[in-house]
Image (cartoon, rainbow, N blue to C red; front, side):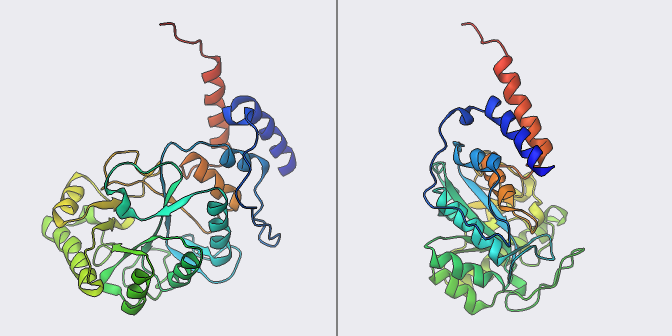
Length: 307
């Protein structure tokens, strides 16, 4: 069934997408081919990614990076083996990593990528080492109250994982990584009163600045929860860039305090990961591809406008 589905979709995409009419762009590096994890891209996802022409930059959102391979137990954890395969893919396709602070000004060129980590779990230190080994950078957003302790906030289904220590955060910063704020206690900022909102934003910033001995100007809203009041408070608190959980091209909204991100999950195959990059969207199942193909076909059938 999977083979038949791939054949049908390959024919559809060949007919209705512009990039299928061009020769397949050769990747800078080969894709990983570990059969045990089955990371090989299906033909459709490979063409979508390799022949796409991204109009802007992207930001990826990770949380936990679990040791080992396969599918991690928690939806927001990615196994280290899958994380490495994803980095292989990014490097092979010519994506350049930068930091969230770099999005404070003008739009970054296409194939610019910010890799972000929310919360500040201790298992992220291995991800830092993997990135540093490759000459890549990333941005971490840390719950300042829980540095060096267990994650104290309570979410349904979320494990209470140990957090990065102060020494690890300093080492990561010295290794070229950006350390930003993720509030002080991981509260949903839209539910805070004005006093609580200011406290969450300023206390987190001050704690990290005291720890790192440098300005902290980047923020990720816990749960992605933000509105005009929260954005205004973040600006007053001194933040210059901030991440949401809205999907799309990172700088699509032209507001550096509302950067969009793609969420990377435990069960994302490499093909699904590739489609997320190609579409700048989390919704990349077969139905989404069908709707995309339909829009492309209708656009071709629509009569050209006369001047």
